[in-house]
Length: 430
Image (cartoon, rainbow, N blue to C red; front, side, top):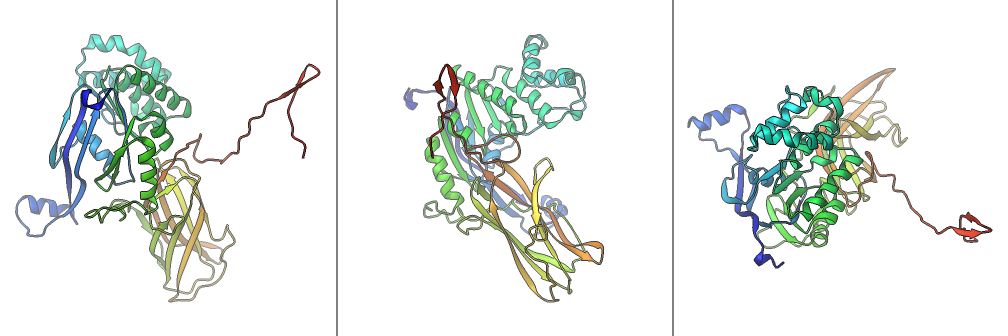
């Protein structure tokens, strides 16, 4: 059907969201009561974004971390208010925005089902009728009778998604929540997406898994640092996104900020400690073309850079990095000693520049980078400087496998040849 004849499910017009950033918490108080002339810094999370999503469409929103994807979904669902602009929604919305949003951690699973159903406007009788299907889909057994604060993230998202899709939404909004479920649950959820599409439901979802965006979406919006860069088919927008990641997106006049790094990739609450006999003074990531970035395409080569200043002579400093997922699980990392790359003394006043270059094999998603400079004083291990969870790194993928990383398997499928009533593998002679 022509889009001109289709009914609009969500219309976003000139949407802007500005956050005020204060150096200290008391500065917010002083400004509220007119006790200071100091102006707060402004962060423009959305810069006049326009979108129109039609009933029955599955629409993806992609972009690097800090591009405004989650902000626009929160405004659409009423969690946030816009600074300027307007949003029109036609239909009942069910949203999975953040793990645990809308759940009371002290309640058990069933109590939270009734809490969420009531918030959506259902009567107790209506929720009673829906409960068996919700519990069947969640499939978490007797844990439904336990407080949700005891749930694993996997159980949590199972129940949250089961509630979201069984309250008869006309519009389903999902923000990366499925990435915490196991692969079988994800398959069940995406099968439900297919059912929703056939029923004419509207689906809007954000994901770093570009293969899912490509497979399920009718259209895709591409955001970058609060600006809408484009709208079109999944292939067109994924190709444009990849150009953004390697700094090759065609910049229009007035869009000078498109290739700058997001403001919120550095962690303001990072854990930092050490003797400071050596100090990490600079760090960043570059892609395979040497362009600074915080988003790496899965399968591509990238480099972690560190600059370390030595305030004392150290016999054999060790330089290290590691990646954690957003749940705090340490996934991978290495150091210069393990790699047998540097086992030398460094004199006071010297600055060393260290690089770690490797292929990105982690699955699509958000990760936290930690850096360190350590060593040994005799037999005693010493930490000179550590920066935990210092940088947010986005891995963008068009193929996610099972688990934390991709083994990059090479798959062959051959036809077996029959001989003497037996099926034997076909082998081509060398």
